[in-house]
Length: 126
Image (cartoon, rainbow, N blue to C red; front, side):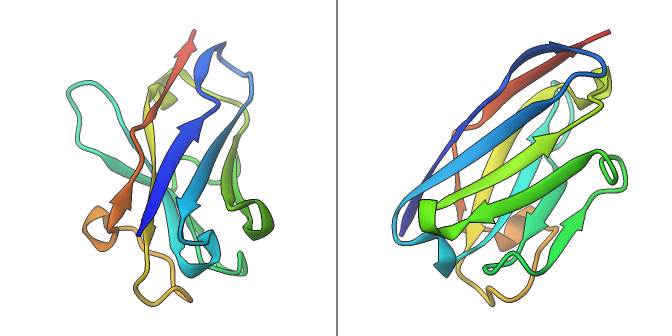
């Protein structure tokens, strides 16, 4: 089992950058394929990005492709989401998730993930 804690959220202006971190404790992060999701008020949780155990495979939602970069440092048991050129529509609670299923793959469906963090708020003002 793994515990996930997100950090790095905050209030920024449009065009600014933020880096979110997801620290894993318990079992080593390299045992998991990881993902980032977000949920805006009144909307369903949506996929943002995912990375396999090695970092060799990544995936992005079309809405963030070219602006966000996912990475991981397994030695630090941490996954990152670098968010550049932020837009007001990026405002949401961002969640980190992990799955121990086929860790060579990435997953877009929230149902594929077994473990979730508590979320970190990102607010982008126009």
